[in-house]
Length: 421
Image (cartoon, rainbow, N blue to C red; front, side, top):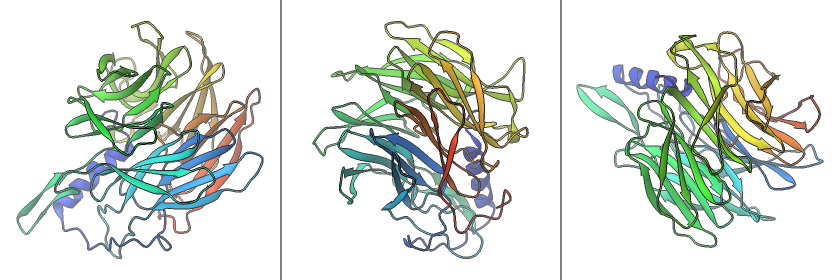
């Protein structure tokens, strides 16, 4: 399970449990006003004057929310984008309840969100025009027949394990919305041209993992980072106006949770990397970059090696962005050594030193914040993360300063009984 993240481990654990006993009855009707929303997946974008957040529950999905705050104010506004279901009473082993997302972007005149519905495995898209409140929904891709269950055996009858798409990643090119996600058939890509309603699909690579991929726009190409060939880190690019995908293997090691961005001069990627030689049983956050017009990938280890709990990973959701003349990365450290959000920055120079800061508001972060959970406003780095209690937090740090400013965006009214909640 190297490089899959703690959420993947929990999913496998739950699937095993379901195979051994019957699943309790679950009421899946949408009850958005009463759901105890455990928001542990989220993403962030910036529209020039406002921070935009998307948030949802984790593996099981649920209600999909949008939060926004205008610069210079302290108020977070909340909207329900789409309603999921609520857990029913009694034993809950694996319950698919609704939407899961960390994909949000700004087109210049609209906020846009993409999500997977864990109930049917399909991908969905919403947009909201600036200055309005309605969210408009479209279907990007339907889930597979028989989706979604985690496999079970009841009275000698086996129900197969059928899953849909991974959570999607999304970007705006100036002319199109571009989306990527994986399923059992491989790595997929969709795009919708500005002002149109049709979604066009392309299969990028049939030999892809079920990890969440990451997508970005360089100004001339769409670029994707993904886990392929088991646990290798792969890079794909397609020039504007082309339908040809090019592929490179960035790293043949054991990798997971990639995040990709563009800094104006190079494609930059962050991912978790499992050590196999000097520090077996550990994982690090690792950085790769490729200068424009070249084919060579350079690499640096960003974090200290951390012990790998459950033989899985110790860092969740590395996310990367360009911030002026710096590269910035954030990840949740869930190792036995720490429970916190780690942030690193480095000058955008080859071989620059990585500087570590800790953002530790509650000390128990889930880190299911994946790609798109860090952004640059032109004056500040902004990021969002959640803790194991399902609370959603927001931080910002002005350029040239060291203090991190913290706000609680959402407090879960009915936190789960774990992690000291």
